[in-house]
Image (cartoon, rainbow, N blue to C red; front, side, top):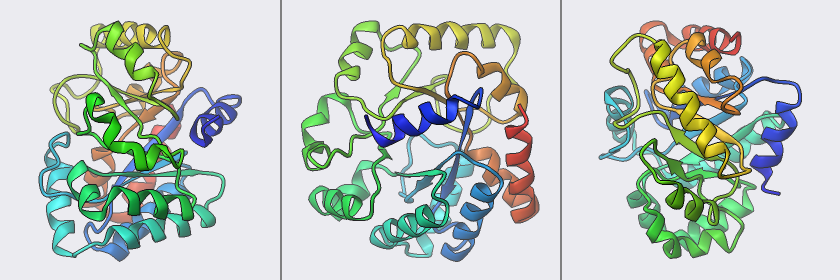
Length: 263
């Protein structure tokens, strides 16, 4: 069983839902981004998604896009990020840390180099939002090292397409709550009709796979997280933590984790 799948199943024995958080490596500085990561983990984030910045993050909203652009000015290196993830994983052995980035910077690093480095540093999970399912053969260097990307599922994806994805997926499935980009949604919280639609959508996906389901895009309040209990295994929140940091620094990040964990 994939280490992430095992981790989620073990924690779900005692938790209704897990919280996955997000940080951009290098924003506002590399040192400060590491402080944000430690704050998220110290406050009980179950899974930490660390994004290596890219100039054109097409799946991300304005908050994360702005953070990526500023982070790139600090000239982060992917090799150093992987070393820092290994360091944090040893510091927080009871939590799971994974890599997220877009295909372009990963190709620049080299997928063979990436696969070997991730294996040597004990990193088993990654998200590549812009990889197409039909481009799966490109990822052979990673899959040969048992590093399978976490695939994204969208509400308009057909059952047949999800079944095809299931054959290549491992760890968990990342269910996108709606079309568009991460960050703020049109309303301040998930309304009743949207909650029913999300529940139906997740139940449909759950009927097609045995992998744990994570739900992201637009998760900002504990009510949003609470609405996912019974439907998803993991709630994913990202922009809300950057917004908290921009408004109130490290302390506000910790308070935001505490609030979402109280759902």
